[in-house]
Image (cartoon, rainbow, N blue to C red; front, side, top):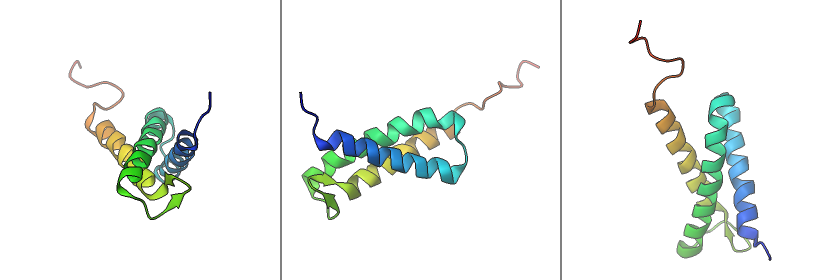
Length: 95
């Protein structure tokens, strides 16, 4: 069984962009488990999109520009959903 370069490069691109986000935001603990898979899946989906639409920044057959854009889209979705969700520490309704 042979693994192509797209999944490996998607993991590397997703890991890079998730690390940049976590470094810039400073919130490592709670969001890391959600941001990393979202960035990796976004990078893989972006690579597939770049293969269909064409990508000006390519590494072999891997579309780097589209994979980066969709990885950041995945990170943004996770952040927005986490901001819209309930706050940690419980609510003060029962007090």
